Image (cartoon, rainbow, N blue to C red; front, side):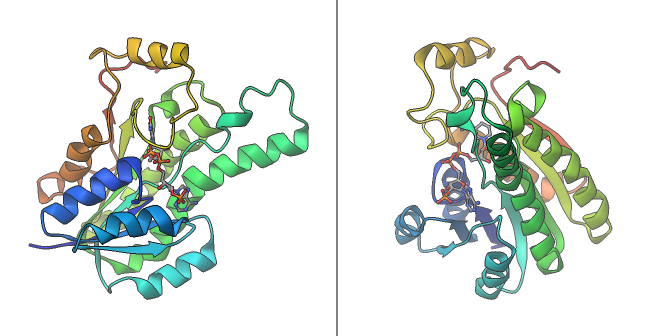
Length: 242
Ligand code: NDP
């Protein structure tokens, strides 16, 4: 049966791979992001896809998104996010105001965006719908405000599971390890850091966006209807501090 699926941040990286998977199997897929360019490029290649620009940290933009969406959503993938503090992390002693601004930006991008999106859509989720959050291995490591935001996302997901469970809606987190070839890390990781991330895996390689698709597809499928409030790590057996 064809479903209607919303993939936030679906114009690039992991979100794009997930969106293309669902579109290829015949689902109707809405992809969102702030920049129209990547979204329109992906949607132009997929008849089953529609692009809608939206900043998921902005409640007014989410209201506008609701007007653009079909009435019923069967799967919500809260994928939009990323480490907004990447380039500042090496600053030795930022002043307190810029520290606060950078910290808040990561919470907005990775926690509040997902919370607002789920809240905006909850009455539109069909019975038996699935919500999948894209977390991060950073949640289980000392990873600054980004890791803190992703850890809070996994905790907050427990509330979604509890609140929407009676309607048959599941809510789970897929937690990737280091995934190469997305905008998230491109040009930002020095070679020694990249090597360390790969060395920490059992598989001895970086993941790619396609590695995340199976876990998301499973948790969004009827086969996973009794799985909720869980975190599924997809990280090549990478060591964490947990
Ligand atoms: P990308 O940067 O390619 O994807 C992030 C996407 O989110 C972009 O399409 C971006 O589009 C969108 N986005 C970011 N902020 C917003 C916003 N406020 N509103 C709407 N869209 C937004 O990187 P990845 O594919 O790697 O990242 C996808 C997810 O996976 C993120 O949540 C990231 O934290 C997580 N992750 C990634 C890992 C990796 O190693 N790559 C590891 C673990 C987790 P635009 O800029 O146009 O808004």
